[in-house]
Length: 306
Length: 306
Image 1: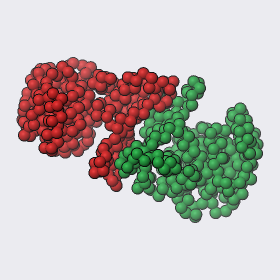
Image 2: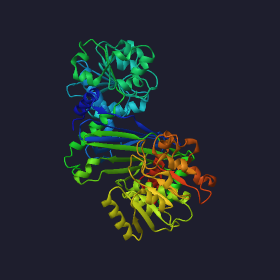
Image 3: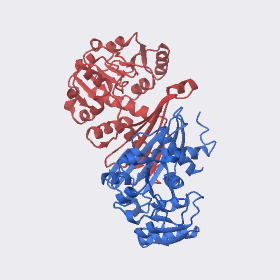
Image 4: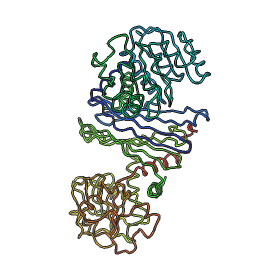
């Protein structure tokens, strides 16, 4: 399975209107606080329909349990037959999320990247870097995270993988020293300001996926020559773009959808001086694509289905 | 597991406002035609959250496959842990649907039932009869179905189980000769007329669960002394009650919810001369209750979850 290729195709199918994605279902719990999300959909005319169930229970951490978990069901679009239950506990979501960042970098990163900036030190801060196209040959990371212990562990782990890692003094240093910047935090207030971002940079903002979270100052999006999102429909109400629209910094009509940019070179970076921003909130098309790809890689896995 | 007791408790919890039931999710397919429904919910404060996935693909029959299938996931409300995947292929849905009819009969059937009338000859026409309370001691069935071959097979099968079965000439004969009438067809036009129903009868209409299907003439509901539904919210837009309201035969304010009638004897039949109608469209509370009960009956099944 080449997750980046699969996710790239998923964005094209999505922007092309070939993906049926009904509204997300959710169950919310108070005591202890927790949520279960149900995302489902299918690419019209394909073989599979996919249902993903993901849970988040923050208090699990205190019991030594993972706070998030999940599984994916794959069913036949032709008979309803249950082809597979992927008990991935959220791993495929991590992979498809990272792969989306790699797709954004493939189409929007400047030609020469001498340092990759990372804000955050969690799972995505690692995967996003590891999954980047081999043609982004940069092995230098400038990283910052609010929690010193976490960023030290991040630096240790990534150095073991062969990266040169500098722990920055703050997000400003990350922005100023990198050409490809990846933000992967659950921040509720902007971390990066417009005048820190150098000409030619690309920023992929992965962290904000709700109406409340925000990693980039609206001025960053206003200063960008190109703002791209995975889903225009979602961008209107969540992620960096929705916050920047709220602030009057940009309008949705100037924003490009990633799948359209993949199909149309005119919707991408045209010079190495441009600033580009990709704001990714995650679409069910990614779940559909990654689950279907895993199944295809196991030729006899669904042999019980007609 | 006593499914009737579990479903009775589910209706009480539902009418008591203790069941969280978000909107049903669905995926629809054209070629071949088919649908996948996702129903989910939880009883507030209970241990489990339940997601049921059910598929219907009518063309499966031509390939020798079941047209419907399904599975139920049970998760912890406390940690999100996946407790069990019940690969029941729709069996538990059949049981919880039949048990709902038994609950309705328990609270609304007249004291003396000398014949049970059955319209339809499918899975529910069998289960609904078999699951009835032992205190409805009647073993005489008057049955009619549109398809002669099916009704003959029904009579054969039920006679083997010890029932005296008469195949009626039409629905009128069923209505006129029975005191407890169960309709379980996918009919789109009324099968039973008001002047066929004798005083003291109870009718449970199981078949109609959409805005289009209909088994009872609106006059039947107008003539009834008491109309009960599993869900007032659903009855406004689907099932016999919605059709009768449309026709101006009854108003929703006169309809009683089954859970309320279980809690309050004043909301039940008060004499043996009254006609009562139970219109059941199915609620997710039933799925939650039956799945949780199955899990509880297997004490170590969820031992892997904290």
